[in-house]
Image (cartoon, rainbow, N blue to C red; front, top):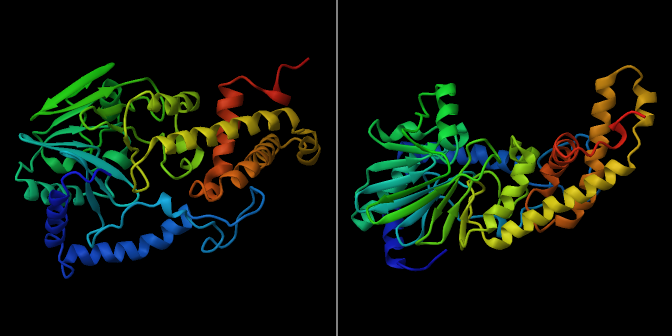
Length: 375
């Protein structure tokens, strides 16, 4: 993170602390929430120490997963459950250690990108801390949807009805369909590109096609060399379950490399409480490439014949067992390679292997193996 303007950052920290007394009700709730969330997060995001991949249950979740590398973790949150920090100039980020939002503090107001509900009202507290320190307006005048999914946007209703809401044209279509009062559809939409200039600050919004979702966009701050692109890169971590439950796996894979085509120095990826580097992107690409390579080997070598004999006319049992065995076989060497390098590699790699095998290779890639054209 840039050290420019350290005095302002100190002022922001002081304002945030003064706005969050330990005796306050929300501090109590945040502390109680953290106490409840931390064990659960450790369960979901930790990892097994070593050994071959297995599709079988892993038993007690409290001690079965490998420790998280220190470099995968971000800054500690305050007593209200959030961290706000300056990236560079007037560009800031907010996190609750699970989700991340970004905002520009301009002379005309605040431009906010994404509003994860788990951060919720802490977005307003973070913005107030920053604008109290720098003397700029605290009102959110513009809100940008990275994409329509509720986990990144369901606090979008907190900023009043007169906010200019911006998103891809498909984002509007999806939100009109969803009819969720917490996610008002964008009033300004675009097809390929949109440049937003507000109060001397600029953001460049670009649509490169389907990836995680049909409407997911790249948001670039050229003056600060910062890119925000959500749910594709997971800095320091393996991708979330089934490659972030993405809707177009080949496009999601390609989007990783599109990320590197921008001249950014800092990446905001939407998750896991820390900023990303170009090394993070290259490491994830290598991880996914290794899954693809292992999936091709498994497709060529795994014989489903014993499963037909074992399960007879139970087609779904045959298919389920085949996918589980394939996923475990693909995942095992990848887990061994990336333990200690990527957090939670032993948590979601079997799930990610399945997605690579079934979608990137078989359904979308047309590599059918034993389920190819009948002779």
